[in-house]
Length: 394
Image (cartoon, rainbow, N blue to C red; front, top):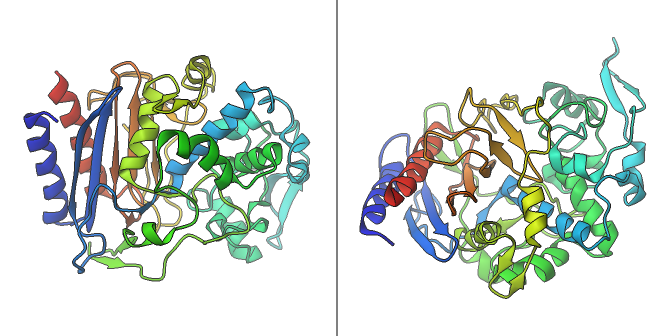
């Protein structure tokens, strides 16, 4: 760890917890292909309590789960067990029942029709299948309000049975697509998704504090999710926890992990799929998965914060064209932080962020536990941290 990076990054983390609007606690780590460049934490696991945030603190990582689920699907594809371009209903028949939402009738009931083509697993990984989230899409929010259906955070199979917002393959919409991809993985392997991940990803990478279910050891290091009020104050959500032993282990958002573990996952992607105990993916699979899968014209969009207690309006590097791969955001141009064009990145709802710059050979992770997403204090300090990592390498 360079002295310059340690000094700069430590100051950024300390500023995040000390300066209003405060973060309760934050952890950040950065790596190159061979070693950890920075590891630090500041603040508390739970606001107002004594336990400090540490690099092995267990966090609900929400949508940073997605890249792990995609990795499991890619493993099956490279083994010839999963055809990314076959109808996904051939693996999960329930996907053949999904219809397209065309609006709402005068009585409020949804108007539905058959899709023009079947959903494929590639579409699920690219978020082009047509599924959305009620957090970011008003039509989905209305469906849930009027039907009484639970959101996908309930971990129920019924929560997945939502209509498509457009014909598969015709647009991009961030949503429950990768929850469905997790169901494809389960169908192909005959195992629960968490068991597949433990055997094929976590164990080879040494990720021993990651899973859908909190072990007793993980629970002793657990940080709580906090809600930021309109006045900026933080309230620990003592009763909030992702479902333990859910009906469906949700591949889009359900994991708990640590910064230390997730950095091992990032390093694997920097190293063309190689892990410390053997390959997790083949180099050619990584190269394919790390490229734009949307084509030359389709780009991802900003996410409107429909449920304001859970998300602000959110966009990374506003105004910059961004694509999607299998399954990461790609910045099509170099970012002001120093991140190379073509890098991989995404985030989790409680203001967790990561990036993987395969060109420069560097990546990092930033974790806190705050709703709503795109919290200005979280985003500002995260981007400053990423910038500090690149400046230390200049």
